[in-house]
Amino acid sequence: MKKALKEDGLEAESHPGHVLFEPWTVETKTGGYYKVYTPMWRAVRGRDVGAAEPAPSSLSPPDSWPESEALKNWQMGRAMNRGAEVCHPHQRVGEEAAQGRLGWFMAHAVGDYRQHRDLPAEDGCSGLSENLTYGEISPRQCWHAGWRAVQEGGKGAETWLKELVWREFAYHLTYHSPRIADRNWREGWERFPWNDNEDRKAVLRWKQGRTGIPFVDAAMREMYVTGKMHNRARMIVASYLTKHMLTHWRIGQRWFQDCLTDWDPASNALGWQWVAGSGPDAAPYFRIFNPDTQAEKFDPDGTYRRRWIAEGQERPPKTALTFFDAVPKSWNLSPDDAYPDAPLVGLSEGRARALEAYEDRDF
Image 1 (cartoon, one colour):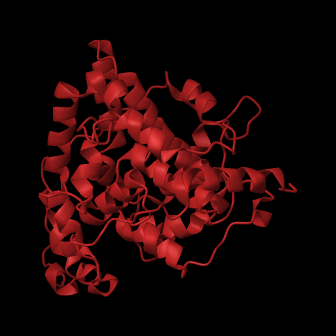
Image 2: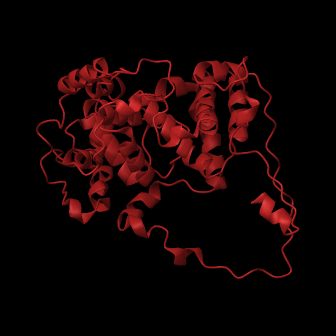
Image 3: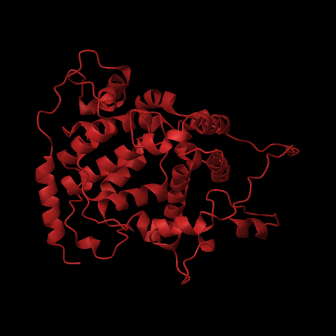
């Protein structure tokens, strides 16, 4: 783009901003890129990050404005059909909203972030993922706010800063090894016996939040209603799909791309492959999350599951009911339906099958 503009006699400049550290500026001692997160965090933790540029004091308009279209005429939400109206109230759009959320988080939640970030029923996270995705807030602003909180004794602030660098890690990997976006990052995983048939009824039940595993189903419905999903829940639903169901992570990645309003190409690719075992990760690839034990630990009183699953509740909350307002009519789902009486894949059965597949791998 810059080349074309310059050829037309126009001045063109580019400025960093979407990430904290340009990928070519962070190297290992041997000159390569980091393939494991923790060493990268240690390498950048003490780096100086320049302050965000101040807002311009004025903008000079052109002598005449070019003709333009009305954005509403593009009907960008048309593909969501009736779901757009359900999803819209859950969006925090624009710079002003993003700055307000950052200020609230630093004042009220960052101190307990380390303890509360894994509790999907709590408002314990910054909630800035969608704003970072669309450039409505700068990671530099977040970085400096986080370090101020560290200096002021905010106990969870450094843990939150690590999450910012996890996002950096995803972009660095995508820059240095672009295959991570749509292919197995680890060589040899092409031969792993994942089922890549997206048209199976089992995959549809996973998408619909009808697996019979309440933690998984609550998370899938939260995403369909709000356009977002709690990070702990993302790991659980990804593990269930790729390990208990032995379904290819690309199917889940594409569904997230369709549904998430904070979808980020780098972070989501890394997240799916981190859970599936095919990506860069120091942890064992055969780690398999148990949704029931995860629910006992992180949603012990069932608040999150009740919030999103209407079936079986005498007076289900609005959050659970709006799922049925958003889903395609062709799914033929109703809050009066019976919740699945048996899981799509039993947890013990799925774990055993996945471990057997790992033992038989020839790579």
